[in-house]
Image (tube, rainbow, N blue to C red; front, side):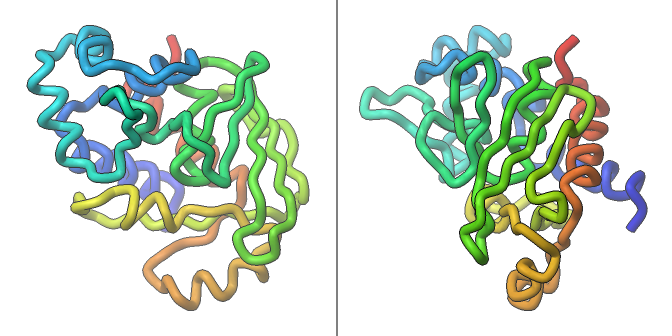
Length: 206
């Protein structure tokens, strides 16, 4: 599949998956402040009614909530996961490897991604700006991803949980064997596909 086709597939999937088209960027920017977000805050930021936002979030069982019923994670999360994104001396987390590539583009800020190889446990570090990959350590690191051509019932379980970093293509071999419908991509390629999709969706920081 060409890069252009992959970008189009990702854009189409996002549009099919989310009933409120700009929910992800609004929540990403709010959660980036480092605190859980109320339904009222998120609805006001997006120009939605509270009940509209609640109904949309109820469709997604993977949303992180805190004990007070505030949103703690939706793509970007305040709860620790294997995928960390640090910017402006603040650390947040991501549901999947590719989500970390969205954050600098949506926020308009450079940052450091830190994760571990899902097969070997080897540390992986990626320096990003909103428009390019600065460095990848180890340089051979790759990303696993699943990009169905239709909406799924649980985006976190069926897509996000399968998106990981691997230290080398060989390290991702078992994952690909068990997920033949998935893909392995270099960090640079997946970042650029993600970045272009974010721009197409109108989510990039102005």
